[in-house]
Image (tube, rainbow, N blue to C red; front, top):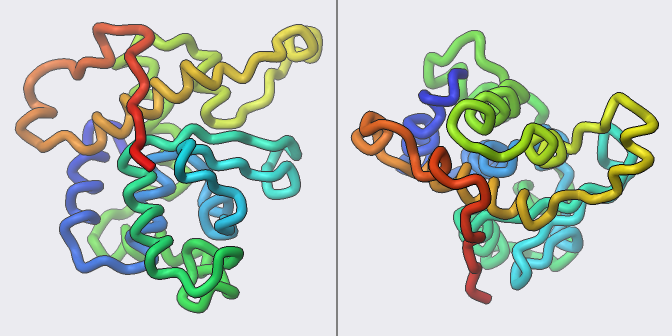
Length: 205
């Protein structure tokens, strides 16, 4: 899906009757993660007070732990799920806390809405295009947000930073963009295009 169309989808998902599938899809898009990373997320991976999601390496495609800075809307969504939990260690997006939603649940939401040719994984591409065209964040920051590994082993050995602070700012801007109304999206470039390192959002405990 072209990144310009994603905010309208997010607004539609938020306005519809809440379901686990809709909340999982919104969460996946907010964080630009892979669907499996959302489906198998458990509460012990999250620190909501610090707005951090630590995905263990065994659940990552690259096999390395990935720390995700959560935007304010993502934390709000999680707090709602937290209030509905039955256990502090269960799956976040599950009917019973033990069985994950199907890998087709989020895709079916798109198909039921008449959206064809769009994949859940493709929202990562939408994020990449948005970051490249509408912000001044370096490509390396967006790549790290997607948990991409550097193809050059020598460069990877020397670049140890995970750009965490910059990624927090980037993901905050992405969330702001996603939550814009259709009218706002028609009024030129968003604020991220005019600042390379915006101030990160503070999330209340």
